[in-house]
Length: 422
Image (cartoon, rainbow, N blue to C red):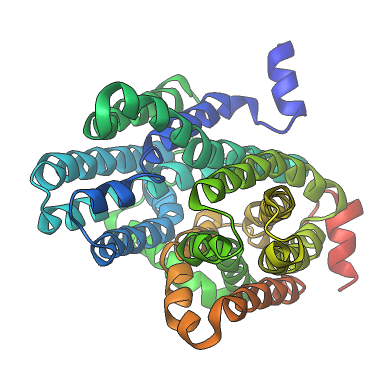
């Protein structure tokens, strides 16, 4: 009983504790190749254009899957949707390795890696919808903060560290195969040991289930504030997927090699996962909108500019650049309360609202690199950084208009007060 109370007090819904652990392990398996797959494929004879095509196809399916994850929860239930994500991940990964990697054939690699992209959004983002229904309203910001802690911790931190050890012990291909073990283990915790159930509207017929899926498209028109939330969520991580495309090259001109950049990147997301928790709590205390606007939008805009100017100001000092990078990573986490704010805009159809938010989480995987590719030849590194800073400032402005309904009762001292003052 003490353990359950302790979990609830820190913001983790005790009924979903095994699910959080499952998402952490699943995302570790999913993310173990992020840091090394592209350079390894280039070593095997592929070009940068080939790997760009591979990751672009992957990004498209991530965006599609992210969009539909919420409404599929409404139509099929959480566990069935998460199971579908697991199956698609296994099929995509197996085909990618067996047919694509083993023959070094891009013809096989692209479709199977794209199929793999459907996996983690259906698994992880469906669990996020589950949290939106189950968490106490007064601690919803903390609950989603813990979600992003385990999500990012698995994807960007544990996956990378595991790969360092696994590649040395069993090679690149077997490391890829081992991802299937980890995602299955994560699914065991989230779907078997997690006994909570959120099977939505199980009495629906096929036409009604199709209508639920359509809501994932129409809710953005019916609820414009949900659409604004999706736009802000897209801006949130667009720079995250753009920086690796050009920032290492820019830093190299100031004497910071790529190997050092990778260490800085790791430090950025170590900071990020810690502040996912902190800003979840902060959002519950001072208001979700206030946290997103001031710490997220304005903070990320300023620290983005800092990342560009710091190498020149501090003459390539890696500690100074790393410190500003960690500040940027921390402030990136200030968007965490969006996962509490957006579903709270609607009384029902929270899954549809989350679908728009999840689409916003998926789109940056190819929007970020696309902005770089389209603009860097025209405006240079400085111009690109100002574009991303401008987008962050725009997100702060847009968040001002994402106000909660007057009858929303969670944390009236912070959030409702802020809403009524708008």
